[in-house]
Amino acid sequence: MSIFINRKEELAVLRERYARKNAEFIILYGRRRIGKSELIEHFLKTTPGIRFLAREESKHLQLKKISRDCAEFFHDDFLERSPFGDWDSFFAYLAGKTKERLVIAIDEFPYLVKEDPSLPSIIQEYWDTRLKDSRIVLILSGSSISMMEEYTMQHSSPLFGRRTGQILLHGFRFVDVLDYIGDFEQAVEYYSVFGGTPAYIMAIDKEKGVFENITKKILSADASLYKDVEFVLRMELNEPRYYFSILLSIAKGNNRIGLIMNDTGLPKGLITKYLSILIDLQLVEREIPITDNHRSRKGLYRLSDNLFTFWFRFVHPNIERIERGDGELVLQSGIQPEFAQYIGKPFESMAKDLFIEFNREGLLPFRFDTIGSWWDKGEEIDLVAMQKDGPSILFCECKWQDSVNVENLLEKLKEKAAAVPWMEKTRKEYYCIIARTFSPHTRKQETNGNILYLDAGDLARWHQRCHKK
Image (cartoon, rainbow, N blue to C red; front, side):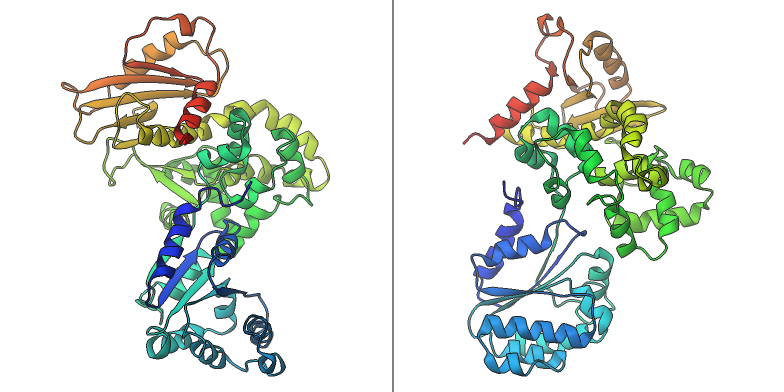
């Protein structure tokens, strides 16, 4: 199946911009292996244009390569014999090619700027004097979020204010991965480990189980994903050792600043600063209870990508064992015994993703406006969905377990729901229990219209209902 699962919105943006008559200057960025190059190539299948892939090499070699690419695309024999000597020559050449609508995509733009910091100023000059009134669609793309923002969007950049649009590319949602994997329970297991990064998902051998994929793709020194987390972090961060410590601490379950301080020994000011950077880089998320505002002091931190969570929890502490060839032992002794428990937290986010899809199709008892988690004083509700102005609110408990007995779970959920401070006197309450499977007698229980039980089979069927045309 295509890697462009759920890239319809991004492609629609690019095609809509191309359909306009005026020049476009688009910034496309996102983490390494998130699918930027593939998106550009897919876009260029239906539009005339060229993608230049920059490499981390000298300016002379960069210009030689881009000259060869131009010569081939424009069928220019002279350019093939006489390559560009500088970036001015390249952009002057492009300016002479823009009488027709044309896409020029420069991929991994930060590599070029690192070699020649004057490049943004050169682009600024040519955009202001020749390109902004042309028919060009210029795309600058890069994998380093921090560098792309610094080079193209910050006020200090010569390119500040020139862009006509930007696309920050995110990973796939669970529902997209479910479409690709096909089997619901396998999709839950795979997504818990590999997350939504397209390259990680496409590395999965769908004919194998999750543990065999973990062993082959992660738990050996030559495995394709064994070092990928480190590569991403070293690309983005100048002081990886402190960031590693913070990320490792969060992966272990230390989700508050105080807990991270106690675990790492780092001062609060440093942790706060680095967490802010990690949030900007979309490596960490800060969650607040659904009933609180953004200034809440109850914020909890978690890693944004499941592969990062899995890697820091199971791989990083066992690097020495893995590099001496004991990956299978790490799997048997450290991962398999904890795997069911590990899936619990990622499954909550998957259920949230499914609920957003179900809500769009009107499959739930009411259409909600917001959904999230709630916690206070040691109590927590996995999902709470509610209408902005009331009166309906739904409380949901998620258990990726078999033979779940709902009686005690439902009673406890109702007790916790009573403590949620939202329209207490006038709200209409609904309850939902989600489980992998329920105990046999669950389906025989008589329930009224405000209680919903959904197992893996139900979730899969509802997902399919959302996709029927």
